[in-house]
Amino acid sequence: MLFRRPYFGALNVLAIQLLLVLVNNAKFHSLREPFVFSDFEYFTDALRHPRLYLPFFGVGRALLAGGGYGAALWAGTVFEESLTAGAGLWLASFLDLFEEAPVDVNMPLLPFLVLSGLIASCGLVVSVLCGQRRTDLSFDAVRDTHRLGMAAALWNYGVQERRPTESLRQSAPFAGHQSSKVIAEAMPHLIMVQSESFFDVRRLVSNIQSTVFSTYDVMRSEASHHGQLCVPAWGANTLRTEFAALSGLNPDVLGVHRFSPYRKLALEGVASIASFLRSQGYRTICVHPYPASFYRRDRIFPALGFDEFIDLEWFRDAPRFGSYVSDLAVADYVRSRLEEMSDQPLFVYVITMENHGPLHWEKTNDADVDRFFKAPPAAGCSDLVAYVRHIANHNAMLAHLRTTLNTLGRPAALCHFGDHVPIMPAVYAHYGVPAGNTDYFIWRNLELSASLDTDPGPREPQALSAHDLPMLFLNSTAVFGTSPFACRQTPGGCRSVAPTI
Image (tube, rainbow, N blue to C red; front, side):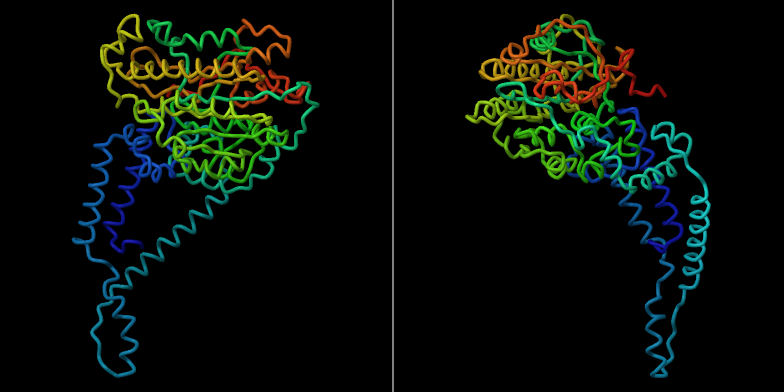
């Protein structure tokens, strides 16, 4: 009906379906998850931020697909005549009847109307049958796609996303919460660092120099809590871990919103650790050196309770490492805000960017291997060298923050965690595929540890889920006395988020 050319119309539908299959396969290869309804948004994101997406789909494949579709459009309109050609003349002939002038009108409109009626009738029948059938969704994308098929899974996920979210938003752990009496003389600064693609890669590779994780190891040994973190993302989809760590909502209760909570759920406003701390007198700041509109963060973060969102515009002249703003530049900004003369405590949520892929596009050399490895990694694993180089820079960022917080002369606490494991297919093919767990620690500076009169460590590692991280962070600082927030350690370690299919 849209193209008025039946052969071209049929081929066009098949071409679009082929594109979805290719994108699905590319996504599953990199992220071990099939294409879902919310991923349609990434087609426009890929045009605005091509470096984040095209390297994993393939630049050559993208150019071939775009050029091939353009050629098909041209061929379809040139070599197949429209069924409605002359329909305008048929309509205009009514005016000629009043002038009793004979008009020779070609009327191919009738077959088009018959075809349109047939399509509409089939659509009505399918809609009735689908409406009578009860579809049970597990919101396990692999299981639902295998059971229903891609088209049906996409349709059902789209329908689910349109349902009201009021009851879900009211169930957020921070919704309607009141704090206990403050027991500290000065409320501490609270910092959360969501480190891009950070995990302890030494679980896979044993020949990494100890200097790469030197400060990380020191802070982990001083931490009140540390261990592996179960995150609801594998290889990408930072916003899933981000939303869990801010809202405290378990992804298992989010339904279809677990895949992209910023599309609708968070946009409508969800109580978070930021909104809670703001109600207790904190100034809440999010720092992310990337365009503010990506993932709608410029609209989402005010709805989550942030007073300020410091995006890429603030880092226009900041030093970069690779394609993105360096982690050290972000640490410099955090230090400048913490050292401002103000009695108001700060809650700063940092989302780093330096270590964002594509890692396989970065250039490395023998000097990098000698500096960061005890022995060269396996052949074809240059992306591992690039990754470890970024981790060394992030280690320097942690050293900067540790010094800053220990010299503030004011209580402060730092919660550090990774959002997901990086995308490194060649590395995983050689060393094994990680389950998807990242790592976290909660560290308190000297002033806060002294005020709590506790021994900061060492402690046994504790597995934790990302949605329990904000509650544990508040509990560990004891800012609000005996905290009403409950957090649950994950028994038996973290579950894998990487399907083995």
